[in-house]
Image (tube, rainbow, N blue to C red):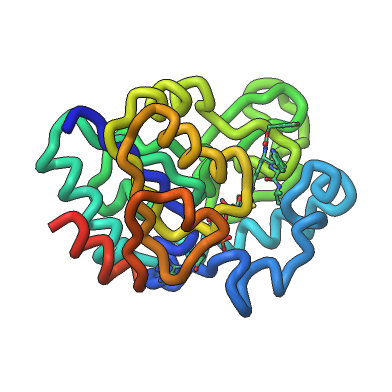
Length: 225
Ligand code: BJW
């Protein structure tokens, strides 16, 4: 096996106590995504958006990696140089489980971004729009996360990994958000074997060669074993 590419979504962190988006009672049933996850929403009400991400940053800090994060980190240790994790999640539970070189395509709660000059720096636990950018001094500080209509991070690198994947695994994602929802098609086109690990069938289940249905803390360690 030369390259294993693993895409993770909110479902892998659900059993660590972090909410998913589209499940019943999920984040999008409590918040209007147009108000908290778009650049236009941020321009309208930066206080609302910072409150939303400050609360999620505090929740993520209080959470711990679960058996699924730990199993993927073990897979990387056991197959050095072959495992690439691409996560849509903005928490740091993969890293805290010991995973290295995680690609955070939707950004990170740990990051701050200047909406004016594009500078990146480490976010404090509680962030405000009026915090000045350390580079340009402008008070246009936002979370370093990728909102609807924005380009996800590291797409060139991701395309390279997908086009050379031998095995592609998708863990805990509903497959409703592009471009991540298209990765299984790209992996199939590259000739990779594809496997989905999810609590329930997703929008994309029919595109995978194999499926393992159940909670991530059960199916991921079983798959890695
Ligand atoms: C368990 C479990 C357990 C539960 N164990 N499993 C092509 C076609 C159509 C639309 C588009 C397109 N290209 C672009 C678009 C527009 C848009 C889009 O996709 N819209 C769709 C709604 C249709 N995409 C974008 O705008 C993206 N940008 C882009 O494409 O740039 C190119 C471009 C730019 C400009 C112009 C033109 C092109 C950006 C998307 C940004 C997404 N941002 C968010 C919020 C920010 C981060 C944050 O706050 O956390 O990212 S939205 C939210 O959804 C978040 C997530 O990362 C993302 C994915 O969600 P995920 O992880 O799949 O969670 P859920 O809740 O949906 O699913 C959880 C799953 O887990 C479920 O299946 C459960 O069953 C399962 N589960 N418990 C295992 N215990």
